Image (cartoon, rainbow, N blue to C red; front, side, top):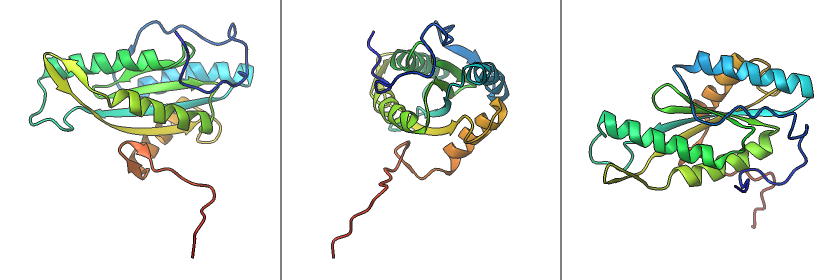
Length: 187
């Protein structure tokens, strides 16, 4: 499968050095468990001088629905989102379902610029329709990001920073409003 999530850049370490243990979605109970998983990934970054970015994605499956989905429908919807998410990231990235309606990602060898590209692409891919139990469902997403070494050095610091980013960012449909480094004003 072609990697269409990150632009072609030379990695900080070779493909053989990157951890590739993910074959399925990891299910975690809460953010502290995700932080522990994140600490293991950060060990790789420290050893190899690699970069990493943490993304937290909170899913609101009630967006556009007349009534709240049943627990069976919600479970099937979250499984479909998890499968779509796994198909949109690289094999070296880590994906976990954190709690009931949140997903956590560790983007290996990715900094702020790459994570912004990934966030936009994931938003487009994940907000599409889901056919669940003969229903067509849509979701609203809230995303937050934290970059290793910029936002913290431990799993707990990065998870909390990503959660804070998710809460405080000026969101436009789950993706930060575009920021232009240079603004031209015509008078």
